[in-house]
Length: 341
Ligand code: FO1
Image 1 (cartoon, helix red, strand yellow):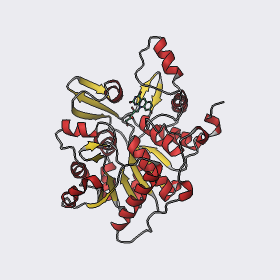
Image 2: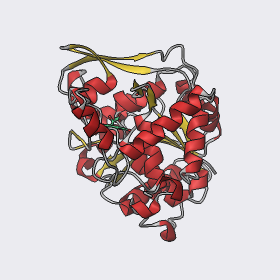
Image 3: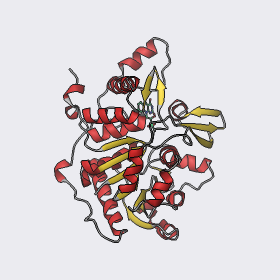
Image 4: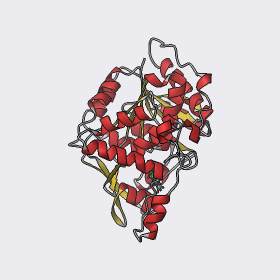
């Protein structure tokens, strides 16, 4: 059995963490959006990859969802003092990850090789794959002009009204071959409750990915990032409105309807079940909010069991590994080489 999760930032990372605990970390492959990546201070920064990596390593900052728990921002304060007007907050420990990744790439490794090495050094058993080793960048076309993704998201606090999204480089990019292979051989494929336009569509927009999903033998399940017409986190609902969609879980299901077999709908939206079933998509109604680590594992387990119902022969569902519960994000979880001296 092997499980594949398509993920962006925080929602994808949380569900991946739940999957690692409920099906076993070694059986999990997470394919991660890299269209949010940026170059800053000469460093290659991969926010979504790092959010997944830190979450699976148990060192993610629980308040922000991104960055490292307990990190300090001495470099940021110094940049301010030096009049650099920094707007993207890189924690001091986080910075070490960007420095390592950038050095590995400069030495000739690919992004995926750098991620594999970083994951190994952070003690992560699951396989984290960037969607591609090529350069793909989300450009946000707004009423205030074109923005690079992080300028829109962080600097402009996602306030400009979006007219369209451009996944620059996606057409020429080669999806990571291991990611395509993982989709082809998966026993279950999950589209995480990540932003459909900013996190999942960049992955789907590359050649071969959609075909691999359409030809996959595994059930494909999407988990809603929208509850009661609002995004669980971030600008998904606002973007849906601005791009002419009704911000609802049903519209998300419709967005994915040509390749998913099942949709996980939040219990607060149970009234949308029939509408989604009419799209030819199976529906699981449950509590999709992941407020704590047990919620993540519970939701992951329910998704896996739902997928099992959608295939002709059962694979035995998930086992919730109680011993893996409560792996909190505190300093003691850091491998010794990244702990404070
Ligand atoms: N998000 C913010 O809102 N403000 C920041 O200063 C910020 C810094 C940052 C640094 C490293 C990193 O990996 C993520 C960071 N994020 C920050 C989050 C990031 O912009 C978004 O969460 C994702 O790109 C959207 O999925």
